[in-house]
Amino acid sequence: MAKTIIFAALSLLLVGAIIVQPDASFQASLKGLTVWWNLVFPGLLPFLILFEIMLAFGLAHGMGVLLQPSMKRLFNLPGEAVMPVVIGWLGGYPAGAEAVASLRKRELVNRSQGQRLLALAHMPNPLFMLVIVGAGFLQKPLAGMFIAGGVWLSAIWLTLLGSVWRGNRLTESTTAHS
Image 1 (cartoon, rainbow, N blue to C red):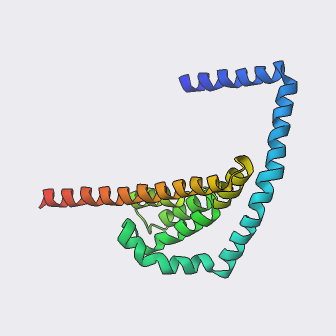
Image 2 (image 1 turned 180 degrees about the vertical axis):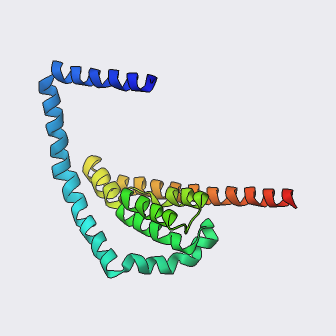
Image 3 (image 1 turned 90 degrees about the vertical axis):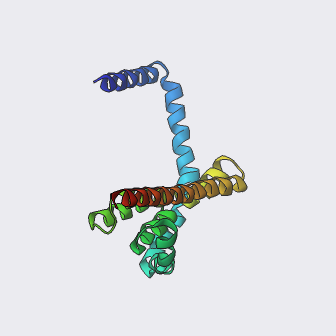
């Protein structure tokens, strides 16, 4: 109830600000659309087309087959879990999450595995980090590489920690029951 009241008050405040300053609101929205049209759309469109071509020709599936053995060893996840990772790292946010949800619906991964897999597969689009943020917004392509590297390394690190921590909990619980 309190949350609803807070959101309603914030919405009214936003509408009030737009009514009081319509010129500034219009200019800000125009600038946002210009940035999207000049940077985001041209930067992402070629990558999205290439991603769909890669899926159509089976490149993502081939990468998945090659990476299956390491998935079990490194992350304690089934081999099928590599496809959401490949799709998520190549396609961006919705693709990885949808692939994890598909595995979960087909009961190929349990809840704990699905959570760890989502942490690994739910990545921003690489071209967005490299081109849009690095080269477009920050005007430094190297900054985009650092951002992408940080995001990817943090996902790998988080998933490795989750698999080790989960493995330790399972070991402790099985020795306690013995």
